[in-house]
Length: 294
Image 1 (cartoon, rainbow, N blue to C red):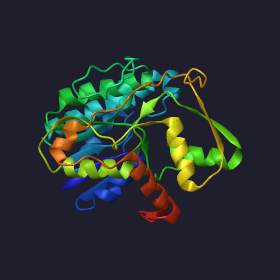
Image 2 (cartoon, rainbow, N blue to C red):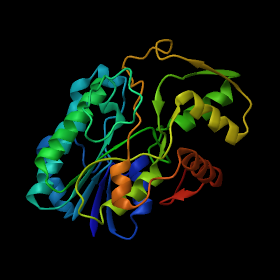
Image 3 (cartoon, rainbow, N blue to C red):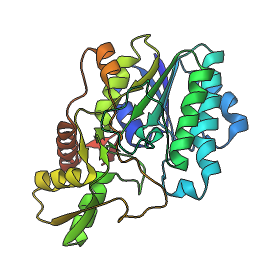
Image 4 (tube, rainbow, N blue to C red):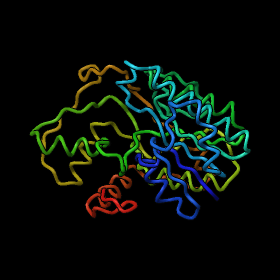
């Protein structure tokens, strides 16, 4: 199958490029197709002649989106809408990746969200991603809309990191860190998510899915696990979201129930701790990714 990957240099795009090797891959970055350039999307997509499109491209600067919500909306909602329309017109499947940030309004939540639960985003970023979901689900019958959480993995984008890299960089310069301990999430390894996508596209079970690694933690406990596995001695102090004020509000609880995906694939994704170890092992090996070093 000829698969077009949009956002191929990002964390998930990089992983999909490595996992979906049994297919003919067309790997596009923003230089090949900028979702802000709306008038040219259909014509440009037609040149790739895809049989399936995986959209890993997104505006994911959560705090900056509060200052430029219009741009976030164009990239995360209007762009995917045009791609979905193209897929519907050409009768090909469309994989669109979304986020746990479509939830957050239920401040007392303690049960993982299912696909049937009502969303309620707290930020401009979350609202733009939710709008993108609705557009894709409405415009393209053969859609896989996949919500994930806390994504981390190697990237070919210079200057782009993830929570793991941020913690390691801070630990190299500081003797003590403060990390938020009241946001409950599931860190998800990009390669595990890419593997799930690879299996899902072999089915015709279209629809909305939650897909994260197994288990739950907070960003504070995630940081502790990173330092433990890297054998880094550093003081880490837990703080609240209110103490770590940011322009955009984050969900206090955004665990996703992945039971639907598990029933379709026959197995759940590995524990997030396994994903972390695989990432750290890959990082230690300086493994090449399409000729480049992580």
